[in-house]
Length: 87
Image (cartoon, rainbow, N blue to C red; front, side, top):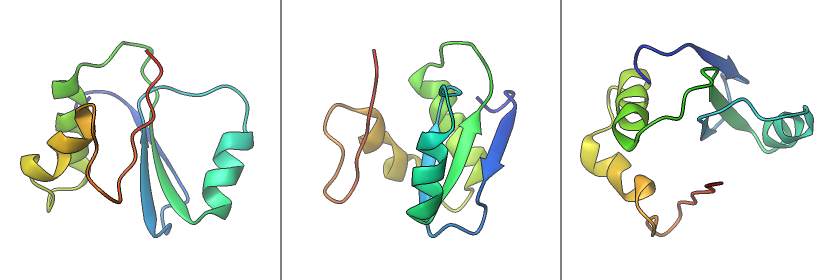
């Protein structure tokens, strides 16, 4: 994901949402914006590996560390975090 194109919506949002594929329609983006979310959207149509997702997040948020991201890539995100995944 580090070499993929990204689009940021609502850069001043207080919460972070990473979307690995462009989603259809615009309602989801409106809802996340109203919820004060900064939305990072990978515009690539490729299927991204966990390593690519991790690299993209670390590139965009250098203060984060691998240990902060890995729990979200697993099946059980940490308390206070949520992962939605369509397989």
